[in-house]
Length: 218
Length: 218
DNA sequence: GTCTATAGGCTGATAGAC
DNA sequence: GTCTATCAGCCTATAGAC
Image 1 (cartoon, rainbow over the protein chains, first blue to last red):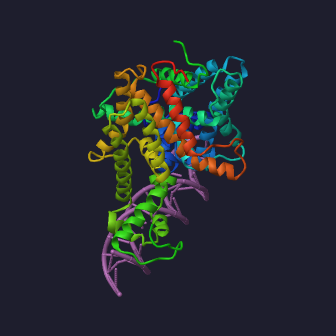
Image 2: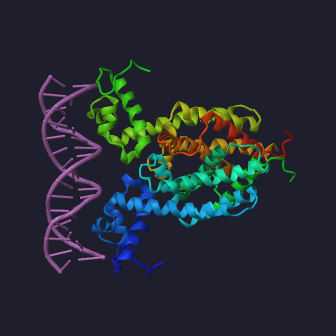
Image 3: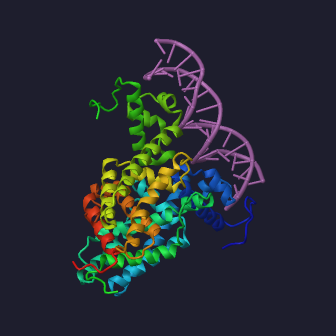
């Protein structure tokens, strides 16, 4: 966190501060409106910097976006890959995967939307340099499930299908947060939606029971 | 299907044909690039009609989009709501929900992307008239789960959380289809991904075991 | 490094002929 | 209903002053 900044009041900051403000504000707006929907004017204004700074520091809108996407993917991938470096039982790893993923989404609420929007656009901005981090996201659940199937603690589910199902569940909960909140605020949502950590527990339980090799005795 | 049309060769068609061509092509492009990314010029060109027809028949880009969103939501909602009109056991209903949903996505491959993009944008285009259909999508799984919890065939899971988890799984599988296909085509995908109906069966099984009240004996 | 002013391209829309 | 031609507005990018 940096010194509190009143909205729209320009403040002096160094080169690094400007870069960071653009990355942060850009992530927020790209998440909300997508690459095409976000306007560089607005990114600059809300970041409290001049819009010419986008070209100066990043080389244009697209390159700012790629910088944000890169940061998003590498952060998430490294957090998740760390899980695989232990020899904990697969069932435990899967629980930890869910809680780690959910914590990451809570700490960086722009991540899920940016990720899903990039996927929707066919990964247009994922270049050779970024692809490994991108694929790493696809690999972690698969690896955990493969371990579990191998050691007999999971039934023989398909690792990739399990991956898509789980990641999809988690991402969807977070990308729908804005609509849910809007509808709730307007009194148009005829249900209550529990907070993210309740969703994490729900998902952990569902996966544990759904993948278990033997019928659980509990 | 209408008479085969060579790409880019304009053909005579009635008013209804023009409308339909714009709806179909528009759905495809809005799904691929989003509302802001899709260009009216391209929609018209690929539909084989003059771009002035968008204003004439729909009143502009935004109204064309809303017409497409409306068709998308009402079709899907009515298919799914039909499930609730039987008294089949909840476990059966849930299986049928999955297969119905998957069939719908396969028949209309633009639906998942349009839906998710609209959710990402906070449901900006869902007006008073469209909201009921939108909420209906939110209600079907919830209703099935409530029945199952009530009659004791499901353990006491949270219906809304189950809803988000399941819908998220299903939608995610389909919105990632374009990336997966691209990466596979380029030989960059280090895994095979089974077809949609295998995913449907995987999901049915996972949900059945994950929600079951008693340990399954199979 | 930052800002102002402006250029230049693209996009959605429509007037008016057919 | 359809098409051509045209326009006004918006959006990104940058030259040049500070």
